[in-house]
Amino acid sequence: MTVKKAIIPAAGYGTRCLPITKAVPKELFPIGTRPTIHYIVEEAIEAGIEEILIVVSRSKNMIIDYFDRSIELETFLEQKQKQQLLKKLKPLNVQIQYIRQSQSLGLGDAIRLGESFVNNEPFAVLLPDEVIFGQDTGALDQLLSIYTKHNKSVLGLCEMEQKFLKNYGVVHWQSGENGLIEITDIVEKPMKRPPSNLAVIGRYIFTPSIFSFLKTAKPSLGGEIQLTDAIKEMLKEEKYYGVQPNGIRFDISRVEEFIAANQYILQSENTKM
Image (cartoon, rainbow, N blue to C red; front, side, top):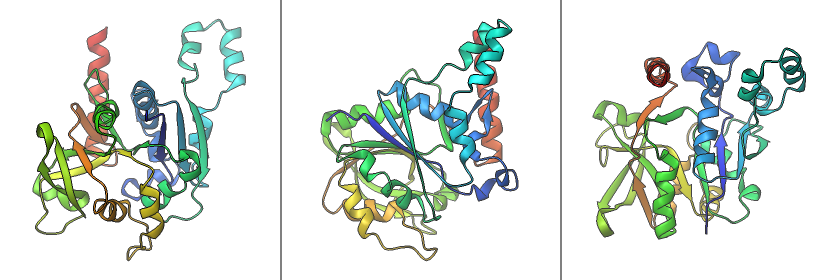
């Protein structure tokens, strides 16, 4: 079945980026003249996604406002005959819906809220604080190419230095058919002895079976439903593949990478001039 739906979880507090996230959602941090989440939505559209569910919290109405039309602004620009600026406000070619996560219960809970939206279809998940630039084929599209061939869940992966692995889910894997990465286990934020140097990044393709495991996942010590726990249990029954997307990845929750992402976009735009 073709993947046409995607979930973008955007309800978190963004505590790694305080104090600015007290007023501005990290998903709206600008890279060039566009917010980070704009690039994520564009990546989904380029991969053939037709419907997106953005999971927000009560404090994230600015995200909804961003993707809504501003008739007053459009009218103003028309009156001033600023057609070039009007083009920048053209709505994105995708249907966007929203749902609120009323309590901060983690990434697994945010995805679980999308069950009725998914409607028993395979779907993508894109985390909006990770952007991947630099390739004609987007990161999600690269995952979808594996899903299309094998109809199995796919995780985006990235080789990490040992010191960073404690911040991610880390996979144990083996080489499968045609050299594919076949995932056999996953460990959430290993403090010592990580199973490999391949960490899970913010791109996923799931079969709808994931919801069964999210529903039975027990809350962690912090009271959150961990997506990693559901994946770990699902691996006992279904095969997962991994893909290391080509491109340059930036985690905009880290100040140095947020700055680097802006420098990359600036250099890219200067090259086009």
